[in-house]
Image 1 (cartoon, rainbow, N blue to C red):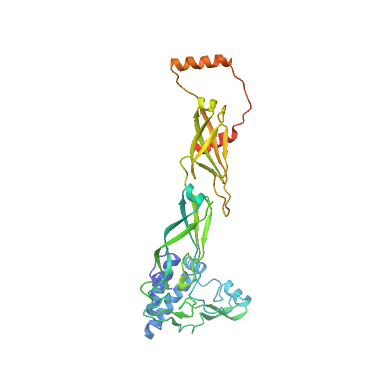
Image 2 (spheres, one colour):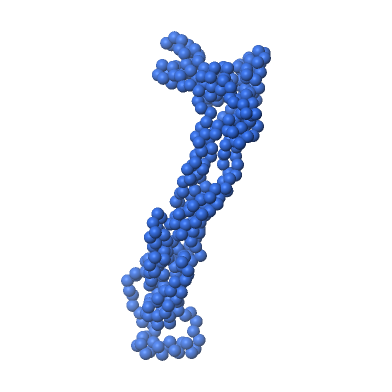
Length: 366
């Protein structure tokens, strides 16, 4: 029995793509349309038979285990082939088209918080399959066109007679000579090797709408990979990845910022300027403000996707207590405590109401 791997010139652990590529290369040299010499036709049949077995996972497994590769029993065909013949699997299918739908593509793009809020337009460089300009996606060299397969006469399939327990049955299989296309490319385009497409890098402009966040996807129809034979292109999906801001923390359409003020400013009240996405905004801190208090600034948060509405900017107040006092400062604070009737070492336990700020601080410090 001939060694099918040796016939195709591949190793025993060759992948399906390597087997297909090896067969196509040899078939182009031995095909009757290219080499009409009758002396090479037996070799062509041998190569085709080897490919028929090694390209089918079940037949290849049977062959690797010492079988013929054409199934067990004495019926000249596998049980599945017999069932196909009687229950529709072996019916006529006709030639399959050379053009196929292209695959979708996915890329990720980073945006900063400002761009996510107000939207932007970016240019990205993408490498994908495009139609071959050399052959106008036909896959043929020098302006030629695919010619009819002389083995299947353009049907894309060949018929085979099998012996079974029910007698002789006729089955149809995709033609190995033309891979079921019904036509062959005698002289493939050198640029795309007959595929009708090549890989190239192209620049695409993307409009990013206001309000996007990490995980959102923008679909660009027809900007994915062109299909084989110049088939319709798939879609390009752009996934948003939002970069962390230096001091603003996003929670949906709400923005959070931490503001640290002195103990005296918290006691007396003050107005502090805070940088927002819209520029500096004034934050009015009321006299007697406690640490963990919040101030809400309307309409200075994130834009809601597909809407003109904007959320709020929440300012979280953190009152700083002096850690070191000089003698004069210490005396003044003691005098202040005496005036207020406060005694050092006294205090009382109160219910915790700073859970939101604690949660925010955890997120902010990450």
